[in-house]
Image (cartoon, rainbow, N blue to C red):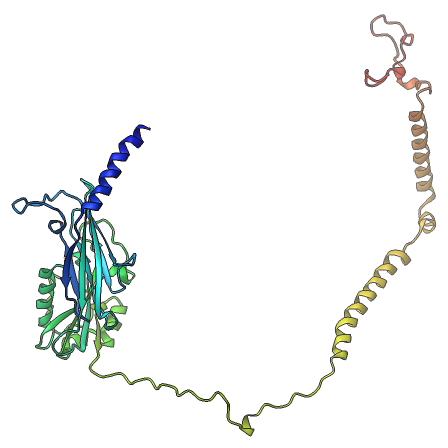
Length: 386
């Protein structure tokens, strides 16, 4: 009862906080085919005066979802390392996602149980400028996904990638955690990272260095555990440790041949004598049925007759057995049989006098050689039986 009294004011305060929260709205402009990153900072959601800094120890968690739906859209992801770190909404919209989308974000203050709601109005549009048909994806082993999402590490990666490419403007197309691609969670050892895939696009063709890295010879060396072929200087090192065995190049400058759309017909096949089905000849299955049924029955009948002959017609009989037995053995057998019958008759009647061989020679106590007063043959074996 006391616990219920304690929890009631907390629930009332939480509901009151939810009712008093003012929904903030922010308009963002993601571009189709370009990576979109939005940082969820604690300063944006905590109601503090301007001159008061946000304490770094305030734990805040976020929950984001598409308005009217329980989850985010398929192109958008959310990540946050811990309640003391900022959250990130990131992804790359596709042409099917073009238009307007509203994302609702709810921030929870784990210390004061305050909640703040914010709406993100996403106006997804097509990018300006030339298309980027040449795309390269790198696997960076030295970073986690939330370490690359801020603007400064991303710009540093683009600057370092420019040394591997032909002169031209580079754009970030996509950032994906290696865990989303089937990677394993690293051991809790210092320096181990989850890894992140970074896709970069450009209007300039691939350099000879990148083509050599993605060549079949490099893949063969990687399969044997050797480093791949790299003809240029690794400008990404030492800030970014790239797995050069997992570099993939995509060239969209050459349009793919359009698939031929089949024309619907009337559904009636043309008459062709060469493809007409052959007529099946009539067949009588009576013989097959008789063979299937009668052959097992005949075999079973033969086995039954053979067993009956062995069991009934091959017995020797007592007369033949007695004639084949010697006379001495027969007399011995008859004597034993007669003695057995006599013992059975004596056991059937208790009135038979006791055999002399069972009487005592003398009385142990008195030393007299007279039979005892009580005949033990008349005493029951179990005293309870009378």
